[in-house]
Length: 234
Image (cartoon, rainbow, N blue to C red; front, side, top):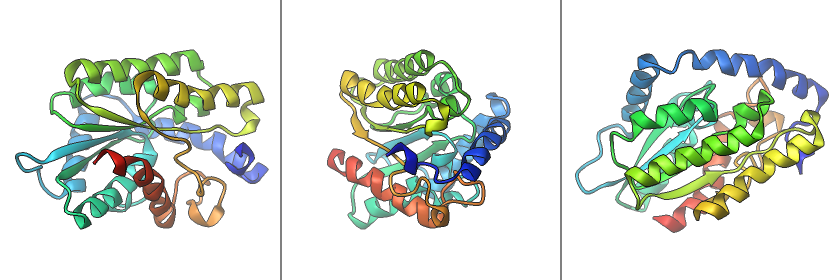
């Protein structure tokens, strides 16, 4: 239920103040971000993928990047541990970036398409919702990102991370935001994670002091939420 996303008015207040923080974390979307993303990707995998090993691109926001934590504690790295334990031929690339909006992601994906990948876990849209951006644009941006990937790599399989907004954004806005993800998943034959933060959102002990970014324990639950949907593609 949406009311579980944030459990108190204090957390809701923190959410909106944090939106500006998340925005400032992103800075420009130029070469600096690209270099950071490249460094994070190598750090997450520990080495470049071997020939013949398939790649899973995690493309998202601070939730994917592991804001406030070491990148090895973020859920994409935890997914890599699961993959390695099963001796599956996949390597994770963490392309999460704090403050990323769907519009910024639509530009950044062009650079990431320079290297092939086999599965894309798309986690964008939360920052759009926090800023109250028009959701028609969010949906269009996510579709355009998907179209760009399909055009370059037609065989890529997609996992889409669903998100939700607190009811303080307005019931209509929150419902429209929530509906974006199942609609896109159905249209594009994506595997849908109904709510990435299921079991974590609104649980104080599983979130950092800002009330929105998961702790190490919270990231472990996110990894389970993702793995439940991703494992069927591997």
